Each structure stands twice: as C-alpha cells, then as structure tokens.
Image (cartoon, rainbow, N blue to C red; front, side):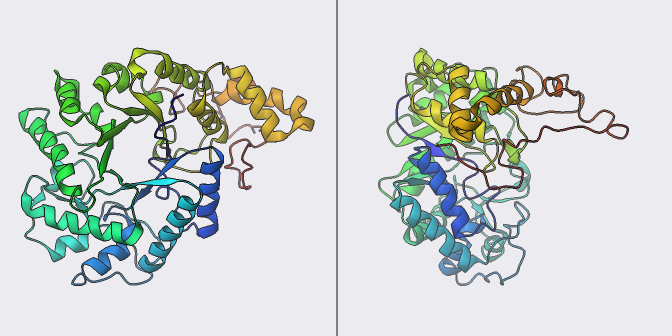
Length: 426
C-alpha cells in the first residue's frame, strides 16, 4: 500500500488508557509503534486535556494553578486523575524526544477552542458558544467566528509549540458529534469554523497542515444534499488532510460514499477499540477486503496510508498486528497466510503445531462476527445478539445460565489483556 501518512493510535495515543503510565511504559509504546513501522503518531495537547495544563499555568499566570493531588479535569468535560501538571509536562516532553529520536513524527490534537473551566472563569466576557449546542457534553467552547477569540487561541497554540516543538500537523475537529439542526445555520457554522482553522494556526506555525477526520460526516447535515461535497472541495489542498474514522465499522464507509473524498488526500482509519473496548472482537477477513478495496478501487486513488485510532493500548494484538501488515503491503496476503505467519512469529516454531489450531478457534469465535447486527456492525456484543456465542470453543452464550453452570475457558491468552505483559510479534 502507498507509504504515506500513518498515524499510530490516533484516538488513543497517550490519551485514553495511558494515564499514570510512567516513562518506561510510554517508551514501550513508542518501541511497539516503531517495530510496526509506523511513521506518525498522535498526542493530545489541547488545553482541555491534562497533558498541556502546565502550559496553561505558565501562559496565563492570572489563572490559579491546580494544586498537586487535585482532581484534574477540564470542567465537567473529562474528569480524570493524572500526574501533577509539571510532571505531566516533563513526561510528555520525554515522549516526544524519545519518539523523534526513534524516527516518529507527532501530530498534535490541538483544538484551542475547548478551554478548561478555570479559563472560563478568568475570561467570562469572551465569545463562547452556548454549551447546550455543542456535542461534547458540558464544555466551554470559544466561538471561532468571533475574531475576539482568535488571539487567545493563537496564544495557546504558540505556547504549546514553544513547550513541545512541532511537526506542523494539527488535528482540530469541527463539531464532530454535534447536531445544529442540519439547516442553513448548521452549514454556515461548519464552513466558517473550518475555514478559520488556517487563520488561527498560520501565525504560530506558517507550515501548518490542518488534519481532521470523518467522524463528523455521520451527523445529519453531511447526509443531505451535496453539503459533504461542497465542504471538502472548499478545503481541498496540500494543507488539508483527513482520515476516514472507523471505516471498518460501517457497511458503506465515507470514502465510498464520497468517491474517495472527491480527490482529497486521505487515509483509511481503523478505530476498532471505540470507547476503550478491550474485549476480543473484530472481523479479520473484512479488514483484508476493506484494505484491498482501498488499494485497487477508484475510491482509493487519493488514499495514501492507514490511520490507527484505537482508544486503548495493548489489547487485541492479533487484530492490530494484521492492520500493521496490511498497512505496508496487502497484496497477496490471505487470512490463512497471515494467521500462519502470526502464529509462527508469536509462539515460535516449536509451538506452531499446537497453537495454529488454537488461533483458528479464536478467529472463529471472536474475530469472525458477521456484519449487519447492531448500530456499529461487527463492534458490539450484547447478551441478546445471536452472534454472541462461543460455540466454536465448545460452549454457548457465556451470559446465559451463569448461576447454574460453570464455563471452562481454554488456558491460553491471546489479547495482551490477561494481566501479563504482552509479547509483541516481530
């Protein structure tokens, strides 16, 4: 496959599931990404998140800093315990230094519109959007259409770049989970916000590339008329990039609906672990078929890579190992060839004859779910789902009858989620 932009762990890298990781654990993740030959990865440095709060403390001395041991969280948007801001900043700087030394480049999630609550209290007269209109829960969102907000956002962006350096690629969404009624007002808001991105980022970084994703294209306004086409064509160019978030989850991904995003450069996005889903799940054959479609169909002509965007790490290793194989060269790779190679790499030649049938059982049980059931096909298992069964392993629905019988689980672990430190296939 074309060796273009490949972002490691898009939605989850050093964000979901990585709080309280120490430097060694973070370096292990970088080593894993490098081993799988990724060339980009993602760090969330938005002011709403804990990774950059020391930047906020330094840039806005009039805002009270958080005390060590406080419950860190930007208002009520995302509450989490985390390292104290100063140590968190040093940790992130260490991640960036080590990753860049290993050849990785970093794309920053840097949406300077969404502020922590303490900045709202410090600047009550700034142009904020009504919170009930924004699909982020309870957030403080600067209105980018009002020019008074731009200097504040640029101040945040510049301070972030000064603290962490930059590889010039910034992810800033435009209301990815919001519905403003799908009318003219909705269209105008999204157009204005998207076009403002370059105006906001260019003074702090003249080499800016604005990246966004297709998650917002599933909202009602993008599903009517030709709005998606008009939106993409207004933004199209070398300073714009997007990935098709969760393309494997939808029967018709956005890249298919849009003829390859109308010629705009993009990458195929694999979400899979939405919301930190750590159970074994997925459809391996569908993943192979999807990648081949992007490689050979006209809809994939402007696709130049694969975006990894799980929201948890070190789970479903078999699935993500397949993504890594497909990202570089899916030609001639069948499921049978892949599973044979994975078994040999993971367990070694001596254990191959024993573990190869076990891998087949695993695939039949949990990596082979037919598409078409549930809101997101192939993603969720529920007790009333006819495919929620482990019949291939010798027992039925694991929820039914738990009070009256025991379930014997095969004594091998294949996910990296069984407590032991996972061994990464070479």
